[in-house]
Length: 61
Image (cartoon, rainbow, N blue to C red):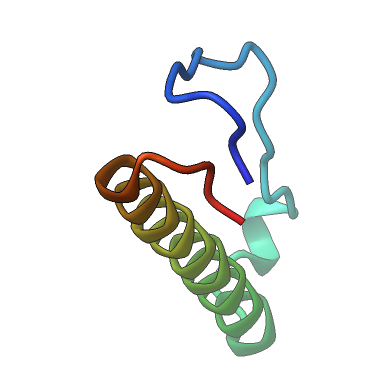
């Protein structure tokens, strides 16, 4: 939940790190793809909640 409409870029980010030699292994690719899809899903849900709160004038929950 974002209590304010203002958002600021963060200086911290997350990285998926593995040895270059194993980066293309199916289990690594599957995990990376799943993790990125989850993050995108969370972002879309947060954006929807933000739009609803903006339209209704009340904070998103």
